[in-house]
Image: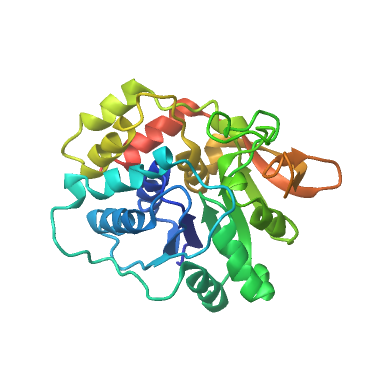
Amino acid sequence: MPGELVLFDHDGGLDDYLALMLLLTLEHIDLLGVIVTPADCYIKPAVGATRKIMDLMGRSTIPVAESTVRGINPFPRAFRRSSFHVDHFPILNRHDAIATPLLAETGQDFQARSLREAAGPVTILETGPLTTLAAALAQSPDLAAKIGRILWMGGALNVPGNVSHWIDGGQDMSMEWNVYWDPLSAHAVWQTGIPIVLCPLDITNHVKVTPAFVRQLGQRPQYPVSELAGYCYALVMHQDYYCWDVLTTGYLARPDLFTTREWETVIIPTGPSQGRTQVQEGGKRITALDAVDKEAFFAYLMHQWGR
């Protein structure tokens, strides 16, 4: 029996690779393809790392496409450098050739074509900005009807944003990075009727990656995916790091571990609050992840990456 049709669009940040590594273990998912958006990364190494991870996990028949969209507010270079680190991990470079195909068409064209050709409703798993999706919908607005839901790591509803200390003045710091990179595209998607399930900072702030968890991952060299996850997290143990994209993908895998809540919301597209996801009566009704069983969630990650 066919599984849930999913298109995965990520933006090459460290947590995006970990989300991919979880997604590729899900047997109830029919993954149509992976798109890399050039936001929290340098695009060439991000595409390379993505394809090499798919090779490592035996999923080299799934196509990868490189988006050519651009945002408004760049991610810091310090964030984007992780794409080079992951692409050069020895565990991902044991073979000279990469088997996972890179499509000639752009990510936005591939997304539009995949939606057009899909046999049923497609879930868009989005762990970066919504820019590539907005570009695909701009080509053919009718494709919105082919999307069953968008599951997005983005926004901060009732907590502060996470852009402070990384941008110049003029903003009120209420925004989250995936919205802030391109608030106009997020605002455009908010005007559609597509159902949205949001994984905001409100929940991710409570799911921190701990040194103990990273040590556990690294103590299982017989499982290359677990070892790779440990390497990835080791790069950021000098700072507070949370399960942003991995938690979002976890909802696709194990919704039973989560509770949700509905909110009416708007995206502020311009001005000092550009990129803010604001709770506002009469706005678009979305479903937001509200809480998660953390112990069960981390145990699930250990199980899925134990292969």
